[in-house]
Amino acid sequence: MKKKRIASLLAVAVMIGLFAGCANTAEPVQSPAAGAVQETGTLKIVSTIFPPYDWVKNILGGEASHVELTMLLDNGVDLHSYQPTADDMIAIADCDLFLYVGGESDAWVEDALANAGNEDRIVINLMAALGGAAKEEELREGMQEDEHGAGAEAEEEAEYDEHVWLSLRNAEILCGYITAQLGALDAAHAADYETNCAAYLEELRALDQAYQEVTDAAQVRTVLFCDRFPFRYLVDDYDLDYYAAFPGCSAETEASFETIAFLADKIDALGLRYVFVTEHSDRAIAETVIAATAGQDQEILALDSMQSVTASDLASATYLARMEGNLDVLRQALS
Image (tube, rainbow, N blue to C red):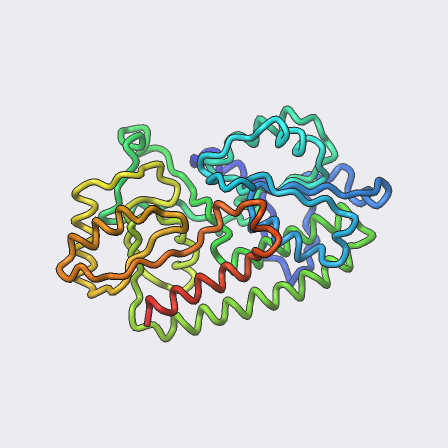
């Protein structure tokens, strides 16, 4: 997302730091019909991606029977290449609550909302809700910049890292915000949502503490990605360093000789035994980097960015379980 666009979003964001637990007195982003849902029956909620979908599911708890909860990106398509279908546009137009990330990949949302013609819908932009906690995407040493990002125009613009859900601490903030908006929309069940949220936050905090304990005891404090790097928020939470082939939202798929050589040299210099990729990577870049190291014996590990969860995954997948899986991988790599 460009600086001028994120500035306008953040200007209207509620200061989430004022939350105490799940209690939130902030006004919803859009709430002309707040509290009226109990009069109309089914509550329709649409989330673009899996993490907020699962957060809402946990906040609803036993009250989910009167809710129709939909995830748009349910066919495995990556957030960065998603294009809404006609059915998706209808779902957005007809829903009571719409949640989306708000980064550059969601540029289509503004037109979708403008054309939806539903003034009663509440909209939650996760990045705007985070306010100052949203981070600019970094171009670190050795990282390959998108070819289309070169030039004077690129120097004047900055994209914000969209992958806000890969921080348990962000998840805690956002769940509190979502709970407040649900309560305003569906006042009859607001107390239940508060109770469910409080229980879920305890689980988030317990897992955050487990991450902290693993990283505090880490013998290795650098992760090296032979891939895009969507885990900026996660490594910043626990003061880990990183190197990567591409930024998190990069469209590049082929690494240059210079990038390969840089990563291989870093592996050798740091004595790293593991390199990382994201889920569903073909591992081709990682294998090339390993072949360029002195030892050529590093193991490839995958961290789950939760950007391609499918409809068939929804019956068993949970945000907490996937973050626990990432912790298990980090425990192995950082020991």
